Image (cartoon, rainbow, N blue to C red; front, side, top):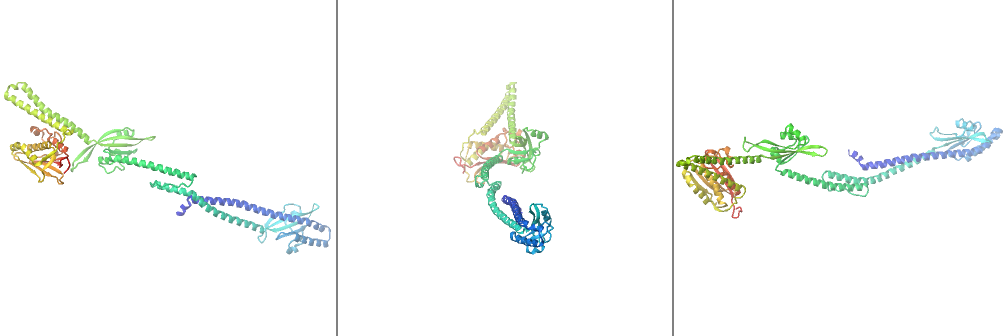
Length: 615
């Protein structure tokens, strides 16, 4: 596997290309050069044979003429002379030269071992063609000992007549050995050239691949998120300019990614800290982005792979409108589990849909904004209920006053006892309306922070004793036993005495109203477990409050027994005013009650030093 990767590298490929180019070039040059040298040597060798054969034919022509005109003695002398001439004039090593007469018989030969062939006829075709005065009688052949030889036969002319022929047969072994030596020299040169080319190719390829390796390392580092690595710039050539462009691209990409990450962090931070839930779905309706608030509102752990239509219970018509790019708003009611087992609360969600548009692609998704409208709806409902309660509370005494005033106007005024009773009723209803309006104005000042606190050092025991004294007459009327208990070392507190007195008066008045004759009421003051709060409780043994009414007992105009409370002169705002005063002091108020056993209302105030600092 490593070998394959090695041969796939650019450096190896470049070296192989260099070697192949040199090899092909050397082969082409070698074939051309060796072929040319071989042809040149053969041509030179052949021409040399022809030249010497031609010289010999001129010497032999006069000697062959007597063979046609003289006797045998003179013929023998001529043959010896020719042998002498052939051996002395022909200088080609390893060649046999024969002088033939007009009949093709051997007259003289250059080889001493072939003297016995003199007088025999040479029947070779080239000899016959030469005796017939046909030019270009030459041939290459391989003899019995696998030796390549060259044969030439030329006619011997005398006075334009063929009087014989010269036959030359020369070995070409030396010539081909020369060609083989040239081949070997060229092969060695090729190997040397390939070796040098390989070394130079490695060096040249390294100069090309080294910057490429640097770019590759930088690209791999960029893929892993490291943009600090820079590619080396080794020159001003194309690769150098590529390295500079790559470094510039890396720097710009780093800046772009940093800006993108910063924007993503901002977007993530905004989404995470939004008070509204956000859901984003793709073109198929699959949720791909959400924030923590959306999970809380939908009471889910994740929306991975969920469908927006199924999650928000969208019908086909609404889905069609969303796909058409029409933004819309709808209200969804969800059941969420309450704090106690079996209880459930309704959560009202306001969902606003906005399509995501992309250029040239149309709608590619949907964003859903989830808003918890439960509190808003409760406030709206509370406002409507408050207006209805105020209207009802005012209408009842006004109706009574009007009816009694009309009765007085119709003649009841003349009857003294009846008119005094009617006037008393009108006076009581008027006082009730004054109390109601006074409580409403007090609540309004508390809501608008127009009732500033005037804190002063207050002795807690004295404050509770005075509360018990103020209600001593009512307590004696119902034979209710009242007691005050204050924790040791708890002496003074920094608070608004007048407003806290109003809180205690409201709580004490309610305790007396709903405690049966012969009951008991306790006023208790103590520190909290960590010592930072003052806790004051009003505990009675009254009729108690049903559990279903405990959650709304501090609502304005809320009464557990409406008819009885109204008859007792209550406005239904006492506990609401008490809660607002305690909240203005930075404290909390809570009510604990058991039906037919009693009620305890406890409010906690921070223990402050003079100037408003905690103790």
